[in-house]
Image (cartoon, rainbow, N blue to C red; front, side, top):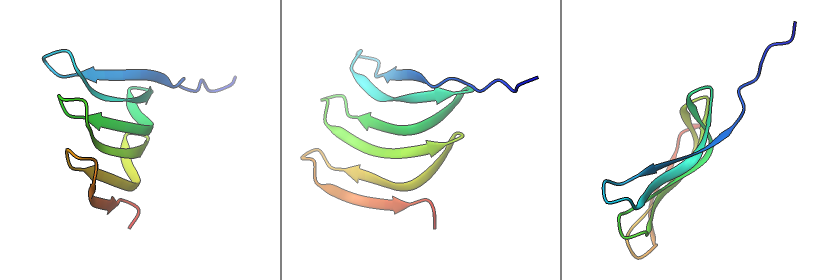
Amino acid sequence: MTAKKSALKKHKHYHKDGSLWAEGKIAGGKMEGFWRWFRKDGTKMRIGNFKKGKQTGKWTTYNKSGTVVKVTDFDK
């Protein structure tokens, strides 16, 4: 018998006003792969990757004008 793999499904979260807050993929109920977050005004706030629901690799945080303000490495 073959073990069933969870399929990646696109997923989006929204702010209360209906604007996009976050988007990425879910597998087995956990965040997986590349995700990105947005402010209510639509500007990019943060990007990063998940592996089985845990943050992995370099995550980048941006200010409202799109300038990188912080990079965090979750592999260290």
